[in-house]
Image (cartoon, rainbow, N blue to C red):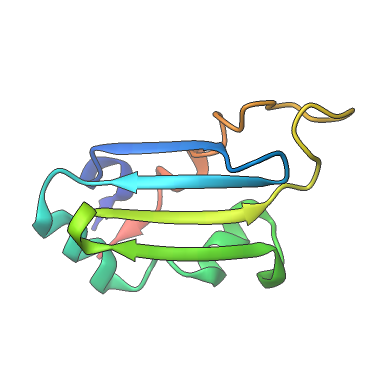
Length: 103
């Protein structure tokens, strides 16, 4: 098994407007993308567990083979820039993805 961080070229997060976060998983090798996509490990249950979310909070998980990427979008608990927001740009939210194990 390999960690997702070792297979992906880029793991990043960002705001998708003030109320959502988008996680990007980008690959530079088609075989790595295919391995991760075919594993089925990136799914609603996994993201909910990692981010302590409910399934209704997941806006979507998109596998884009032509772009060798996976995009995961979920609702923020607190909108960007408001009281109690600790990551205004949503740029520090990708870390939980790093240690996902891919068979």
